[in-house]
Length: 282
Ligand code: PMP
Image 1: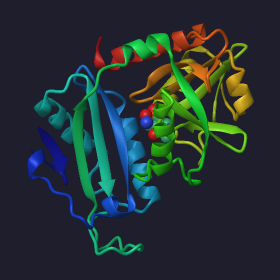
Image 2 (image 1 turned 90 degrees about the horizontal axis):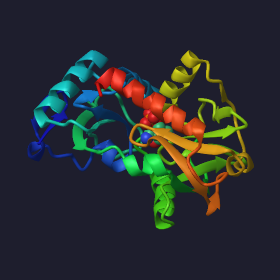
Image 3 (image 1 turned 90 degrees about the vertical axis):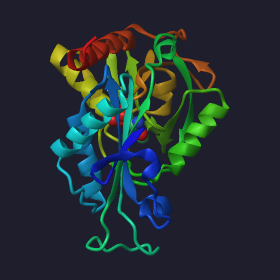
Image 4 (image 1 turned 180 degrees about the horizontal axis):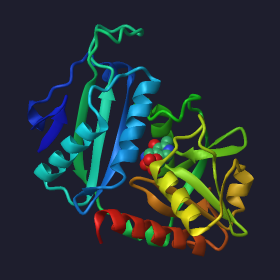
């Protein structure tokens, strides 16, 4: 298995991460996950633009252009023969003697990318899954795709311990997002999701869905909604790179509407599938 390490493709077994890598010690870095369908990257430019944006926000300077990164990723996918999977990209601030403060001049970022096989979660997508709600205890820059994922990890762990797929977070009374997905509700035909500000990660899947809906004249609103609105919605679904468009049929053991995936969710699912096929082939 090959991986990308600081700009070159090498065998995974030859790479060793320094114990004083700031990503390892402080979670001082950022990452992206891009979906591979039929051996092709889906919305790679959007993900790589967000990678650069996240890096810039924490003063990491990635020494490669989007085009260079994309070419490396394509080479890696072909070399590893991945058809259905993901590529994980991580950039840490680099290696330096452990100290909270950093001097960007002396540390070269450590850039890695590797691929994994991942199937489409067909059964969950067609039947829907359950979720719990949990208080959002994260920092106030959730728009940065930072390596610091402890609150997300603990939230997802609680969901899994309760046999649920996702933990839907709320701050005060506002629903923000899942531990690794964006959250949408449908009420009387109106489709709503949290506005893209510092309280959520502006998901690429979220952006794709918003743009498909706009194109087709399907009305969506980027507006805050409460946990009450979530529990009393006609339909609830999640979006994310690996989550795709996932119907939520039960929250906190309480059925959403009649407890089956709704027509709006199903329609958005099929429009999203068409979008994937138009880019990566059927
Ligand atoms: N919110 C959070 C906290 C996430 O980690 C993710 C990514 N898995 C998303 C939303 C969805 O983003 P995307 O559609 O770009 O995968």
